[in-house]
Length: 92
Length: 208
Image (cartoon, rainbow over all chains, first blue to last red; front, side):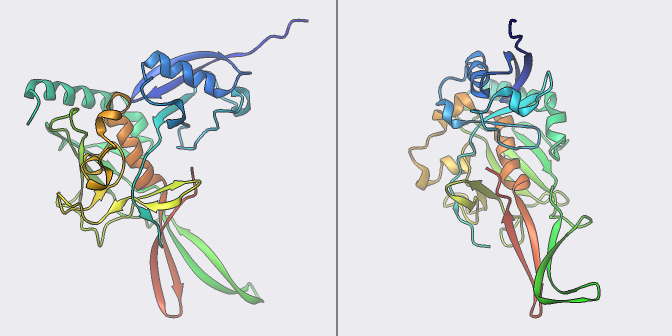
């Protein structure tokens, strides 16, 4: 019996523009991220410097399978460069 | 101004248009585009997300006296840090990154470091660190030590970490999300009440 893979469309918000990526749910999220970055022309910085967050600002592990997250079709994900901050150690 | 004013105005309009398109995404985070925005300035109101958390020592639970004092936290929903205006100056954008100052939304005057909120970033390896710095060597005002902000890239300690390295991958929308993270999403104001009085501190949520 052939295995039917589920497909889902994720909306990556990159610098305020939306890039829809249709993907199977079995691969790791990083594959969809790579496609979104390529489609948006963001190839200047290494993939390791980009972070994927959900609507609440939670960082998503891109090595996990897409199916692990329970995304709905059309889920918005925010792809941003890591904050990259200077500053000093926090002493409350 | 070093770039053609028409080019600069065109880029300002593009950034403003993008913010207007993404208004719902911003407002869901408590970030509101203000009507005071006028070229080359963009003003956004940031509203605090986390309420004040008060820590007290509990000596008993109901009628039961505890063997040792227990530290108890309570969030006071009606109290939260003040909202603030983030004013981005897009002069010479995007040859230069936007400049950022923090203003009192009622008076329009710059916030004083001693009384304003604290901005914190959290990294797994580095832990929490303060990214609102009291005094910039050039502006002598509080500034956000975060990539994408002019005051970060113009600081002598960050020479070499040039804005032009990041310009293709950043714009005002993504910079605003970074500002939101370190100014609103992560920091929370805490108050510890002890026998000797109240102590207010800022804590960063351990959220990579």
